[in-house]
Image 1 (cartoon, one colour):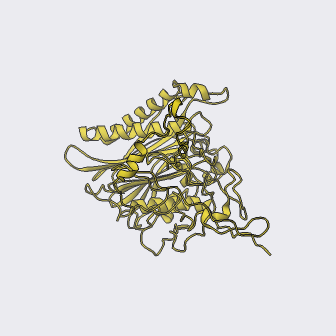
Image 2 (tube, one colour):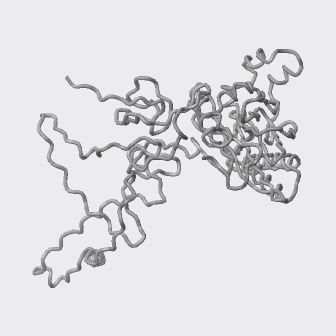
Image 3 (tube, one colour):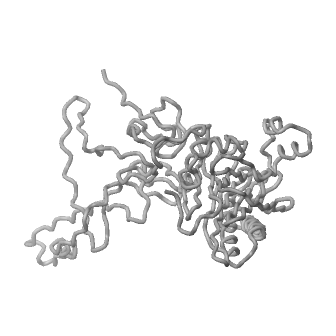
Length: 469
């Protein structure tokens, strides 16, 4: 009695990254055959759950060389290499020999997608070059047609592999990916570049993930390091969350994060006070988002019930002795002491319906955030914002610690400062990238209902060149 192949236990489709239900044999979004997904390797990195710190060393998320681009090992055999039978049970005839590989000029690679990179380049064969240079057909004069031998038609050229700069489908591993993000060969949707992003700049690190429920990542971040005029180091992090009910929220968050980050990194070395620089950076981000409303792309997507592109913003600047935060919206900044000897703290106040209810004394914090209107924001960046009110604040912590800059996709699962401190690894000050990964994993383990983005900045700013161990 035949048995169905065992499906690997995966939570997301390796082709289109859509969530899967237990027992699914095919992806409901793109139809990917889940039976060919290899089993999860036993030594796969494990993210901390509810603040538990893994016993092993730092997780290395580098993509395996022989993989499908998402860390899943590639199948050992290609489909054509497996034996098979016809409907009558007779063995299938052996496949024809593969066509000769295309001739590679010096400096050009024709490796198969997903193959290891140890294949040496070879100089072109002069005989093949001569054959390719010969004309495919020969013209025979009419008076010699009766004696001339027939000329065989030229053999069709073997298919060439996609160029190195072109994307290759993660499903069939052969087709080119068009500009719309679909494979020209099998039609599978491809994972977007922003589905999962990580960046480390000196001692600052940030991680952003699409989450488990959204079809795209509408968060964005910008991190960087610079120096003040006296040579003291300064670290910068900006995190933006696109407003899903608006047009092009992903473009809004990306434009705002880039504009604010560039403004800060340009102003601090000129001697601008960090709090003033943060205020100016929020204004620059607002102008960048406002400009999107006038672009043709917005006009094409605009619908009567939609708003102009919009996003929230939160950021932090860390120097040797000063911590500056700035925000518009409901993304947050937390302070967590490195030695956990003193209580952590939340450094921002939400521009939201729930925060207004609490501030007015109409509801308790628990009641306000349990209401379905809790996350309705009252401040944002966008052309249709009522009035832009950038919030900034300065702090002088008396001990080392870690500054957590995050969207509500994280703090929904660690709302209080104590919960955030519990979820963060104890060594986050010296391994911020690892700490950011653990916090994103905490949100995904909790349900991942929203995009998740977090940046970690050690305080005080370490010397230039310091980073995660």
